[in-house]
Length: 596
Image 1 (cartoon, rainbow, N blue to C red):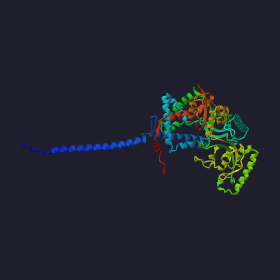
Image 2 (cartoon, helix red, strand yellow; image 1 turned 90 degrees about the horizontal axis):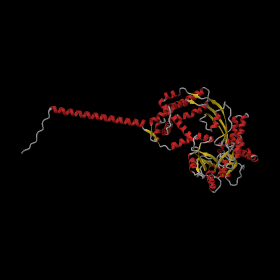
Image 3 (tube, rainbow, N blue to C red; image 1 turned 135 degrees about the horizontal axis):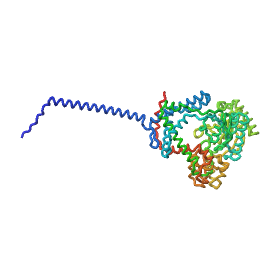
Image 4 (cartoon, rainbow, N blue to C red; image 1 turned 45 degrees about the horizontal axis):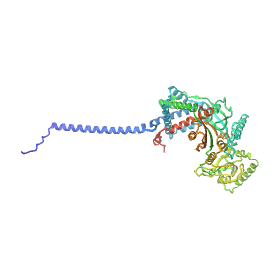
């Protein structure tokens, strides 16, 4: 059979039209899909860009995300709050209730907080802290009512009563070369501050007594605290209460002994009544966002509720406490291992009475001869009556030194390294290398007045030598060695501790949670009862002997200490145990670029 290919039929006109229509449909559909894809891509890019710039997480707290917009919103709210605070202080200034200087002091910090270089980072820190507190409150069933939020808004809108406070204080100081405060030192401090109070009561101007006290010795503490509210005054509650109970300016408190061992009395030079900004909430809501401010006020109220709960537990509640003896050694100046320290007082006699210009004056200049003559005369006078040293050092017509003169020429215990112009750690030293050669010489007697020592960078230096001792880390190690060798802990404390309780054998009393730093607390509560802790190296050096352990309620003295420190230390612990992530580069990028 023969096969032949079949000839294809010739397309008809109808079929051609059908193919053209189909092709058109396909092309239209393809073009439409391409447009949709392009638009989707553009939309995706837009959404991704918007999310990256607004909704993307910039930090997380225990899994709770904080977005970039949340930080921007808080920064905007903070700026509105700061602006309103400045407006309130401006009103007080315009009403004559605060001075221009006080206004400047009060607003300077606010204005620095408004800096665009830091407003976003500080706002993020706020949000992180609030998240930690909010999470703790939720886990511990600490609720905040709407009334508590309303009360917080009222608190925010109120500037509490302010008083301009001045304080004179005297801290018991050990008599060199001893490191330990004795009962005699305590009695002397009390006698000294009672004398200052009597002078003011007798009619001597407060500032004159303050100047006298400040130049008497390193044991005095004089402060013009400035205009403060009661809550911001960093003193013990009893003296704070007394200060804000004074009836009128220039009244004085009695003498109070602080929990740090310092004796203090105070006065106020002005009293500014509480001021309530009736338009506070409305003005901030208008400038920023009313809802944001309500959330902010709720966060404040939550922290206050948590603080109340923590203080109820650790300040006024029963806790496990330990009875403790302590030996405390101050950290000193410079780095541990810098060697022995010396204690001196000094007076400088500079060429031309200019210590700052001494290095530029040739040692052959006649002004150096004059400086030497004045120094020799001072040595002769002081050897006849060493008790005049502090008075002469404080007299700026005698002493050309403008730094230590305010403390009667008294220089703290310092190591040899600090006498150099630059320490081994790279910090600025005293520039008294020639003086160091003499004061570290062996065999010097305590109380010796040395011959004038020429320091080309400063002048002729007259020195009262007051003693020499090992470096702080060596002293605490020696104390531990004595205790381990069988010497009674309290005996060692009386001999070498620098704490206020040294005279009572280091009797720190009962220690409850959060009374001391985390390192100190760990050493005390991890050491078995009856044993001595290892050396604690924090802001100083410490040894503790654990006498007893009981579950007890803090007494009044403990509560006064705890009220000031419990919540901040508890909060630091909470923050240290939180899992916090933040994109620091993204935070930096939120701030606008600085114009060139």
